Image 1: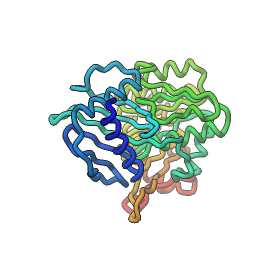
Image 2: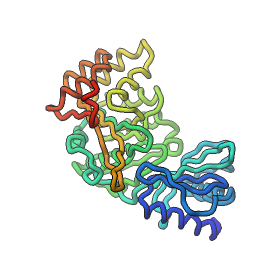
Image 3: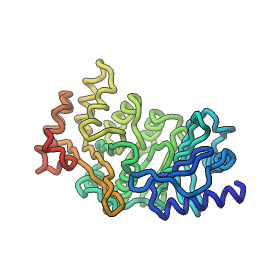
Image 4: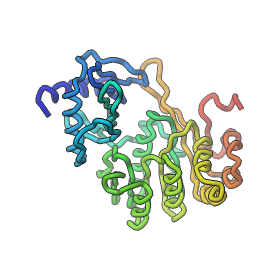
Length: 330
């Protein structure tokens, strides 16, 4: 990378880190913007040139050992770790006005569950030897951060083999105790489905899936969980009940019954989360927790997902929790 370009990005990343930004948005011939406490704000800087973006892309592609001749007409995600920038995830796209890059600024160290505000009840679930635990929420709600924190809890609880399947690998977990293998989908394994199949042959104790997107992903997720391993995964969903409904709806009619039975048997819980901006600055983790009680398992087995929210409201004594203010709207 040219020295002038490196100085430009050194200043941008330093300022974003200093202000506690979660994301940095770069677009060809436009002034950069950063997201702080959930709000997007412009940065006092010169517009980013096409050449500067091309150099940044080349640097990230080289760091990921990806052979991509151009970013025109591509949608690709890379990870870049520079001493002065920290670890970052870069999502590259092409728009009508030119190249764009959405940069997620990742913490330099593995996140701590207590510092994040992750509930103790949720941390207790990763001490299990088998079952399925889902972390759900909208884009930018911190699902990947919570997943990494829970894997740290699982690793510190006892010596275990943990395999992650991510696209791309975001947090470096190599320093955790136990045997840790982080596999990048599209680089180390061709797909999530094949990655799960490979992981099951690698004698794992814990399998973590970065994100479940498609019906095929849901099928792979259940297959991993029903083999007797502890499986953690993230998914986009508005709340805990919606994630269960979304997963079951992904299966066609002739497979839905079996999927409901398997999910009811393997489910440990679902934690939904969002980040709420505080008046004085910063954001607070707000979450709800669905636990696989006998009543919840029966609801899932019968496919009556519309009853899950009410079951959560009534299940406070068992540790279940709804988002703040939702109970009054039943």
